Image (cartoon, rainbow, N blue to C red; front, side, top):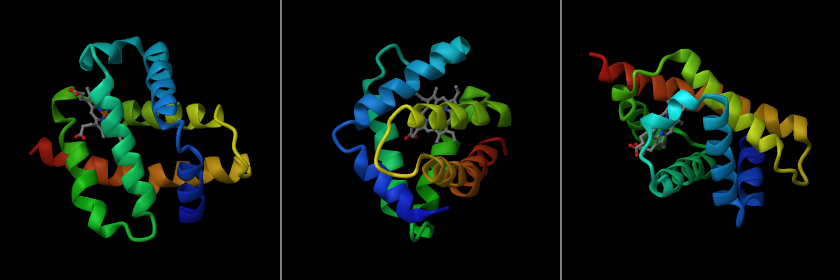
Amino acid sequence: MNTEIIKTSWNALAGRRLEFIEAFYDRLFERYPRYRELFPEKMGAQHERMIEMIGALAQFADHIPPLEPYLSNVGFQHRRTGIRADDVENFKRTFLETLAGFPMEIDPDARQRAWQEAFDEVIIPLFDQGLERGHD
Ligand code: HEM
């Protein structure tokens, strides 16, 4: 994961983060309408928590260990949703597609790669760890 690009691109979204997260959920529910009913009707708090999580990842990108309990707990919080690996892939793909729609002065391919790796190397493994703990 290219931590520099993660940080720079999250910083470049300052002032547009809510817009970005809203665009992400709009796209997620458009693609996968069955996910909508899992969420509360009002999505405001959810948007805030997503912004907080991604922000924490960007902030701690150089040194992930202090963030591990938090990220695995996010996975644990999903135990009631019954989600599986392909749902998590759908989430990741939708996030990357949404990001592609927010141009910034960073090489788009390198930026997409950095975020793909953030999901594959950090977010998803820790998320899965917590989710599996919920299935004990
Ligand atoms: C790696 C993938 C995912 C990440 C990083 C993620 C992240 C989050 C975060 C940060 C929260 C806020 C709760 C908290 O802070 O504990 C949350 C809640 C939630 N997520 Fe995810 N999520 C992912 C995948 C999914 C998928 C695939 C679904 C299924 C559609 C899903 C459904 C939900 C639901 C239903 C809630 C609770 C909403 C509520 O009751 O307020 N998540 N997620």
